[in-house]
Amino acid sequence: MSRPRGPTRLSKPYPGSRIEILNDASLRSEGRRPTELRAPTFEVVPGGADSADGSASASMGLTSVRVEVFGPREGRSRAQTLHDRASVNVEVVWVAFGEAGRRRRGRGDRRVAELTSSLRDTFQPAILTALYPRAQIDIHVHILAHDGALLSTCINATSLALLSAGVPMRDLVAAVTAGVHGSTVLCDLTALEEADMPSATVAVLPRSGKVALVGMETRLHVERFGEMFDVARRAAGVLCAEMRAVARGRAREILDAMDSGPAVLREGENDSGAVMVEE
Amino acid sequence: MATVSLSKAEVAYIKTSLEATPPLRSDGRGLYDYRTIALETGVAPLANGSAHLKFGQASEQATEGTEVIAAARLEVEDVESGEGVNGGRISCTVSCSPSAYPHSSAAAIEDIQHDYTALLHEVISHPSLRPSNLSILRDLKSWLLNLDILVLSDAGNIYDALFVAAQAALWDTKVPRTRTVEYSAATSKARVALGGSGDMDVDSVEQSGFNVRDVKTAADFELEDYWDEGEPLRGGDAWPVCVTLNLYPPLYYLDATSTEEVATPSRLLVMYSFPADQPPRLQGMRLLGPSEIGLPLIKTLTQTAQTYATDLSCALRAKLKDEDLRRTEKARQRFASVR
Image (tube, rainbow over the protein chains, first blue to last red):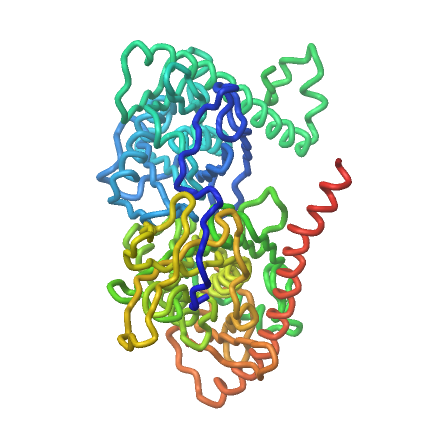
């Protein structure tokens, strides 16, 4: 590899060439339609002894996040405890393997700090913290791979992890990242698309339809924003249905394991007092 | 690293069980038995090589046990102006997730991280293990291989897990193939190459036979094929495995859980490397813990560790080859059968 060969002809398309965001047939670079989401993979894993109370992982395409939840438990330092409710503590471990550019992002890094505070602000109102005064709920987010839509994947994974840990919440929080290219709204952006267009992350509480978080760091005309916001909200509703299906599957597993599944799910026997799977 | 606290009664219970005949351990294993090891390579498609390792996880559903993810990423470094070294170099970092040590403060986790990083880096980045295909352009550019390891949970025997995961990730690493590109001096019809964009011809420098000056031509490199993953990292058979011997003189045992590690805090870590066609090499050794161990005992232990290291290394190689097969040939067969 050290001796240069003769004249070199670079005839293959170089990676620096621009990738089309949306081609003539209105398809994106991976062949998705504008409002099509990447295939989500949600996994809810129960905590074992001496480890996390709840653990879940979510991946949208190549973006992969794993969240572990501890708590509610006694706070580690008295200074952080609140007398009338639980304090929600989020820590983000960003060891994104394969991300080009800067490597390990420590805790003081700007992106990590913003992610941490967005997650805390999203889940503090969603969790019923008033039930656990002087307690602490620890949410540890591990970012395994980053290919766009990072904040929304983190929010989805955290919702499932809190569900797996049995932390009472008002509702599952589902989030989606959407952007605008020209006049088309695109859902669930990859890293290349995120770099190229204004985008926003919208998190909703599907049952009430309330919005838990709207985050945007780019500039966008206010007329376009309304349409993008609507599409993102509907997409989040769809994702929430997926997450509920996973949660229901997990609950069914637990019931089967407890061997009381068939007895409870039979119709007309609602007052058995055992856990109900909501249909 | 144990953050579990045990009472004197529990410690005595574990110690007397080890001394019993036959020796008893809480999960019914023998003194020299490992827990179930689950290994998967290629878990991070954005990295050049990756591996996911679990010790002692009974099923897919549980999260107990020691869990480690390792990934290797390649970066280009300048040899002249940067920190690059001719022939490339390797740098290891270990991060501990706060969920691995849920009762420790952030400062304690930093200390634990530093211990693991220091040991792993010292052993793996040693010049005797450096692979031969990490150089790009002599004296100009070379590859830096960043090996990042994330500890997701720790249930004992973390050092063995770190080294196995590191070897698996390095085995899985592919180095992109590069080709040198020369800039030609401006002649009447020459075109200047700017790092490669679009079609162009690069003319070789025309030199007169009487020109005896040593003209330095600026050189750069390009990837032969952007979408090709590259060739496997060489030196795959020389990566070391670590065997942790937990010492409770005159006994020793392998693969301790976290409670056993607290009960018998003295440990001897031995790292062996088995390069092809060469005798086994001792790559590193470390004694951890508060007690003193006599030199004759250490000599015997180093010898016995070699047998366990050989077994572990053979099993690991077999598994890695099987993983390669699974991802290439078997996947092809499945795809063909589905179509």
